[in-house]
Length: 137
Image (cartoon, rainbow, N blue to C red; front, side):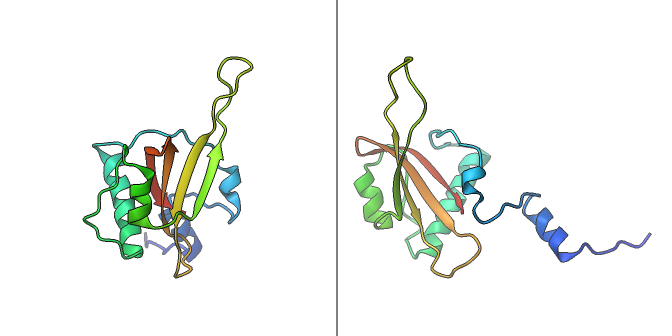
């Protein structure tokens, strides 16, 4: 039997892993737990790949190293002023007392206006980076 080519929209859908969200879907996505940076394995390779993509897109030397434990000021020196700073409240601690909100800082630049572009996001506590995330948005 002759193989028929997939329509363009179906092949795009499949190349995105079958996930398509409307442009304003960020508030509909499930909340992610913040984890420390993976040091080995596929997750670590993917994270470093996204960090390098961000560096390449924004003209930053690929020899630069970003890791947890670094002061936030060092990230700002390397990446420039962050695009966004925000706090996330993570439930309650002991019945009535609220946990302190987590502070997040994000760098996202899309000078070419492409559909998606790499980002780097860090969770900060007392001026120190505790968690590092990278991907595309």
